[in-house]
Image (cartoon, rainbow, N blue to C red):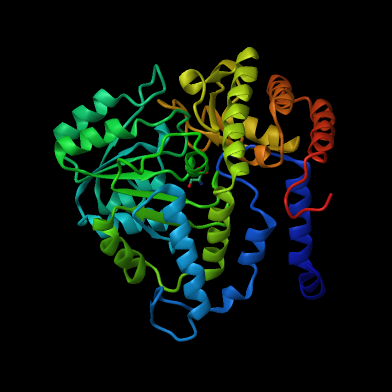
Length: 414
Ligand code: DSN
């Protein structure tokens, strides 16, 4: 950081403060993680200087010999890691990747099925005010309010009624495993293309801790910075027959020059995810989530679907009489970061919903295990049960910091 320090004090100080925040606090946002220092080096490398529109071996500018090597490694490793026929590693992030898939395989106005946002879907899965909801005729399925789970019979009924051209599965706030095979069977009945958004669970799938949609689905996309622990960005995997359409939709359909610094980071992250330690990581993420769920349930927290199969927990705080935003703010004060979230059948507003969403990918990267999950559950309970007790919050903040300093974050000296 010496160059930033010498040249730009404002940015230097903000980054230093962010380092402290990350080191001294508990990161429970389920979509966040810590990349390795190797990934960060790639992202901050000279690759940021280069333009490389096109694909390896077919670029529009000169000087591509090293860029082609890097992007080819990223493509081959993505294919190997997930067992996919084709990979495009250029999407800037998850929303552009999903938009590219729709642009490649649909006409504007086509009917698509996706999960409703307040039931755990994503804005790109057909939110009416988002591009996806405006450009395509999204018919949105829901989870069963009683069980918190996707009702596959209802999905089938909706598919038969609406005859979608595409069905999207894979979510941002759904704690349960997904029945990929069943989705594929339903899609086959109506001739729909299957798209899996595994942004949240890609690391668990790559590490063998969750089932993969790759054997069943036509197209699979994921961001690379969540459980997969790579740089910010995304990839699209697909069957060979969709490869040309997907590649054309990403470039030149939607994007210009790919961010090759991020693509190098993706290549490194894929290599890391192929190591035996990553399998252990994926298993521990799940074990930690289960343990945290059990510890919270002991303390009378109500979990949507009554638990988790993944890295993610969705808590309905209605019985605690504390809305999601107040819980998020109070936990933020003690150094525990998570996010307020709607729950299925949300009676309040998305800006001040009834729930909170949390997960274990980042804390597991730091090496936290079951004993730490117990302490985290205790602190969450104490804060939420004593929401206005500032003195108690100050004391918990110190305890949180003390525990965190025993679990270093990659790239941050403590
Ligand atoms: N922002 C991501 C998440 O937190 O789940 C989804 O895009």
